[in-house]
Length: 249
Image (tube, rainbow, N blue to C red):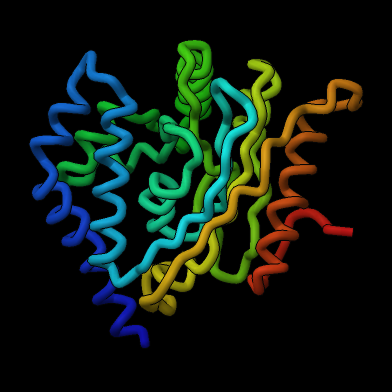
């Protein structure tokens, strides 16, 4: 089992590189400075499907029709490095991704990430603050933003890590909804290095649009806790187990 996990992780980098090379002209054209992001997002969906299938994953994104017409903060759970391509496919609206600065170091992928996304230097308080400012600017320009609220992939024995405040602060201050999305099975398809990996389907479900309660004593914390409980409850109902940062009752 561990041998397959190691091979699967090595294959992860090869599959990403190979599929980017195949789509390189379209990616370069749509990610060029001054290009229209929505076209890049469409090409990225094609890349995501190719990449996931090459990883032995069959994506089955759930359908959801947005009620809010305008920017949103998309907040999925984060269980695997496969979450980014799965989110590209499952997002109900084009989103600009916020992700760890380490992604900038990946061959080819790092270039497109730099051109189209918001990099977060998680080792620096200033870096985290700057990323939130960049996301705030994107919202003001009319773009939706994807932030994984856990701030990173939790250990395998955790169902859902405690949420960082950034996504919810962004939504509250810009008066836009948080769109919650569950990504199932990904942590079992490509877990941590040496942890069990497998091939098979991955499903997603958009849980809805969550608005701030302006009457709450702490608006940001109340929205964060409400979203945490809703996402954790849905994952548990889907058969996921593990430690939680908040009680569900």
